Image (cartoon, rainbow, N blue to C red):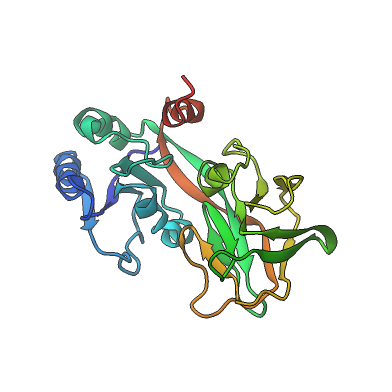
Amino acid sequence: MKPLQNIAILSNASQKGAEKAGFQLKKIAESHGIFVKISDNFPVPDQFLDGMDACFVMGGDGTLLSLLEQGVKYGVPVAGVRYGKLGFLATFSPEGLDTQMPQIFNGDYRIGSRSLLSFQEKGGEPKLALNDLVVKSGSNGRLARFSVFADDEPVADYACDGIVFSTPTGSTAYNLAAGGPVAHPHARVVLMTPISAHTLTSRSVVFPSGVTLRVQSNNNPDTPLVSADGQPAFSLTSNFPLEVSASELTFPLLEELNHSHFRVLRNKLKWD
């Protein structure tokens, strides 16, 4: 890949050591003649990634997810330096900045394209999620009822605490905790996993790209809660039905040349 000339650094000041590491990386980059733009503001400033060759995130997966919109808009690959507790996206080591980064700056990296979810409420504009869209009961302790359709064909009616719609990247997040399968990150699929379904035969379903899912709320006493990548999906009350599909857009993720997705899985999930 081409050597890096302009980079952005985003540090999560709430993570111990992250801000210090951000300035350490800035010093290393500038010693290699690289222009550096650095911030610890959330949300990130407008046009923060405009004109950058890459962005390095000091924090966990949540910090990295905050750059989704700009990473897609400007086509800037994002690399995570892990400071979170259970990050699958932040794969660089803070202890290895001095040895790892000079090689990265010289072009020894690859860019992985991660699939995204496209979702929208009734009458709304499409939005994106890298991990998942979660639809949950708006009532504490009460089941919610949903119907799901695939291209207008009925799939199932659910009585459950909620439903997780996940990308392969997000398959190791809430989807996994709810009992869903792990998907290879290069797969173009949408995983649907009910949360604490009232029927034991309710299981995860995997849909290919090109299928549009429609989620209908069935006479629930309170409007269901909808979140995307752990944040409220809409500014106001969600208008059902919702539509969910695999987006044609992708999120660029900067990785080491020897990066192994399954090595990360074995380490994080204690499969060794």
